[in-house]
Length: 600
Image (cartoon, rainbow, N blue to C red):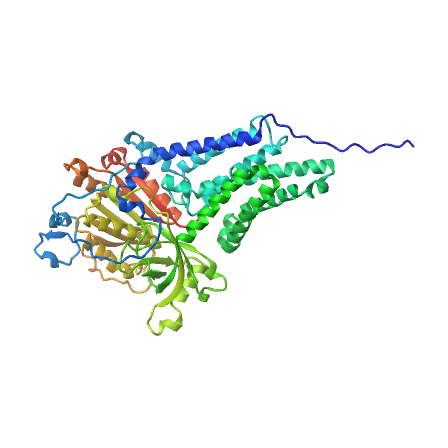
């Protein structure tokens, strides 16, 4: 039998008619140009935010300052009861009973108002705010589509994934600076856009998945080639190649453990794998392909800058924790921090106590600041029981060792922030404000309203009407906050404020208030769910009537709607705002929405 030679090994060659490194470089420049164009469109808001020198350093670093009594303003009461009148005001008497009398007779200094869009584009803005999916607006979808469409060009221009895996490796690496920039808490891109890191996180996830898809096409393409040629073991033993395999594994770990199931069920595992994989993938890639060093070093610089800023923005101090059974929350008081944040911002807190469990001390969780800047009590956080960590915090606050003595427990805490908030949007520059809160979302509304009242007393607020809508499950939730809500109505002497509390479940036990307790329309308690559309119409009517015939510097500048609560609440409020008649929307100067949603 004649000898038959074995078939020659299959040789697979990859060819590309375009330089992949140069191509993805120019694509990145195009993406940066789009970002710069958007920043220019939002530049008026950034300049408006910097209208006062004191605003430049606010909202970045937490600190403590000695409280000084501010200059008082005299208020003339026309009611027969005089200044000792303690009944809550009504809508009819609030404005007729007082008038502003400044110390020096000077006119108020209102903040400049920069609208989010021109009048003729307000209809388009409402459409862009429409929810495509729960928590995802049409604007976010359009941004993602534009980004993906841009990357289609380098993905298919004169190549395809089966013939040129090199192109896809460069495409994935070129997006690393963007994904690291969007993942950082001190988000430079978000700052220029006037958005917190939590607002741009959806784009971080999309870019991350694009990177994982690209590097998998790149890596599996070469693995397929080497197996066909029968040289896989020889090739993978090369340091450049096995470091490429390590970076591929890290990328897959990143996307696998970042899914919602792992984030919700095993947060610490998600966090640890994210940190380890993100830290290892950068040196692995640069060892695999030294030519990628510009992208890798940029990503490293962004990551180091974020870590340095987080260290600078962290304060380790002592806090007092108290359980509030009516609300199911833990009240955290930090008197050593009383300044440095803007209303609506949040901090990330870590409880440095063994009482939080074996690894509970290592977790950080975000909570909206519920107190105003330079308040006597310092920073106050309201931590609602929603998971293992917050349940442990609540149990620690009401531990039997301190419960019998009637003392609040003191613990060491690490506070990092502030972050988020309204960004470049100035609530005090609008003519009217509506805040819709669900459960513990009241913290955002309380801090924002207290800030508006304070600015109004100082003559720095345009807001003429404020309406707070709070939805709770049980009316007993109102017991603890009733004194604060009452004081808000009494303090807001120049701007009428109305507070509507709704409870969605039948009271547990005895109803906490008698039938004759609520004697004023300024503070009401009602069963059921709020009719947001009716509330919006009432506020618009009031603002338009108060703004008619005023001077140019006091003209109607719009309605701001602040929402804090579950994603479903934000979606429903957005839908109701979208139903407002265009004529009414223009009469009030436009309607804008700022939402702070729970969850990921």
